[in-house]
Image 1 (cartoon, one colour):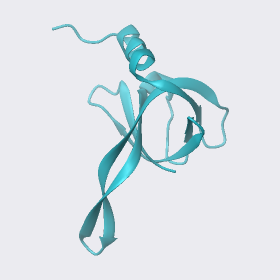
Image 2 (cartoon, rainbow, N blue to C red):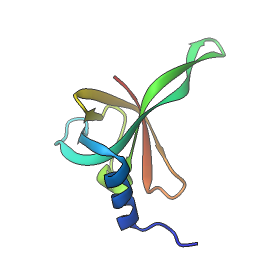
Image 3 (cartoon, helix red, strand yellow):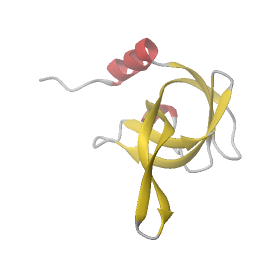
Image 4 (cartoon, rainbow, N blue to C red):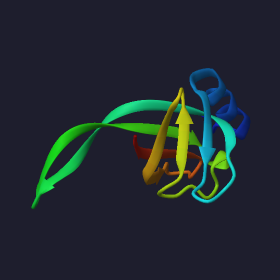
Length: 101
């Protein structure tokens, strides 16, 4: 089975994603394609108790956001999402950013 190439990733985000403006905290904005969804996440409710909540999640190509970190923003469709947690896939080629509005 062939591994995906950088061009495969670009084409996937072009086909499945939407245009976003990514702005690193204190940096310059750039335009890229992202896949925006809402996913179930655990939220601390006090002590060791968590409740389930829905949160916005932005997926993007790691080469488009090489130094992504907490506090960076994505503007998608008129809404700005602030990154609160960054997760990489096992090959560090895709980024999943848990966000808040």
